[in-house]
Length: 596
Image (cartoon, rainbow, N blue to C red):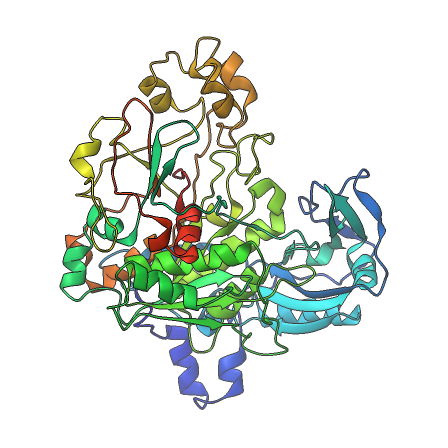
């Protein structure tokens, strides 16, 4: 949705009549009509526990003892809540923002107005900041929304204030720090404080899966047959973007912010990608890296440097967003992870609370499953996206490559049951994943793919019908295609001596591999997938006339052909014609995805 046309609320208009326009009072009052939630004296002896905020790894078997008291805990985020009646008003406002004909239709508001209308009262904010400072914490930023406080301290201060110790952990050879019990706060603050977003250094996972570098557009599929890499020209053909491009609507004047906790290895890779695949003629397209600072106080967004393998996710995001909107400005918004907080969340907070206003669209290709993320962190992403929607921001988030097993990303076997990416599961974001093309399933490959390539290496002929995808025994389409029925049990595809072992142990096994071969596994819940930021670029094209484009189902980046139906869909490209960059890009894009 376009990030424009913001209007002041009635409350702000009234204030403007009572104070000079530059008045600090007129611009600093939060929660103008909010009911105070802290109504009792703060008694340190009367405490409540903030349940659901301890990492599952914080077990005796991983515990290597407490960190030193002076261990720095920098830029922790305290998530607050608003009164219930204010939450109801906000929900009504958000509904009206998207209801054609409503008085508030597309009347986006600023972060400052968001805090004034929907934030906690200044009285409550004063009490919580006074409490933090009395315990020797440094309050760095009270964000304009009034919903988040950035503060720093030491492990000793955390232990004394929140009654939880920070310990060293050794998890599968990786060194971490984390709280070993749920934090506690005085009961008087319980109605205001949701929790500390994070008291550990377990970072979210990038949602891509790395693959071996290849020097071909066509390469063997592990299950037999061939896979064919999809290129920007195919994307434009399949989803009918060429009429838009030819009419001059290619994302010009729009900005796409990619949320990262790393810098890219080389920004020039983006130019090489565009040059190789025929996008460099769109000269308005740009890419920049920014490290967004908070609206006030000490800077909590430092340059992260190159963090592997996340830098591969970052350049992948940039290239494919540009493939769908080649004239858009791509902004890599990256902040360094602190000892407690994901740099991507810091970047989001700083962008949506910026005085200059946020970008109209954001993409997040990272994730953590809901049960592991923690109650306070889940609430933090929900609240941040909620504010972003009020400001006119569309947020696209990767659903992940792990199917229904959101807690088992990038592993060979699912062991934690059905789960989803917490970053993608709020009502305020678009969860992006993929479907599979139905050409192989319906034996129509020759109808949709040419045997040769265009100068930009495209081979797609038209839109290709799509089907839900699941590379496990829970996938009825795969099972039926291979001639197996029923889907589960001793005579199912799972027990086929050739293919079965691959499907029993796949991470996207519908909640775990154990039940597929012997019984009926649970298939309730959400099937999720891998985010391709190209879809947020499609969203940008909505402002430039998407009437000619197809509806936007989500894409699986490769097309796989079993041996019985394999046929050339693109002419192989020799190593001499593809640089190391492009082969890396193709290898990363050559993965299956599923749709939420």
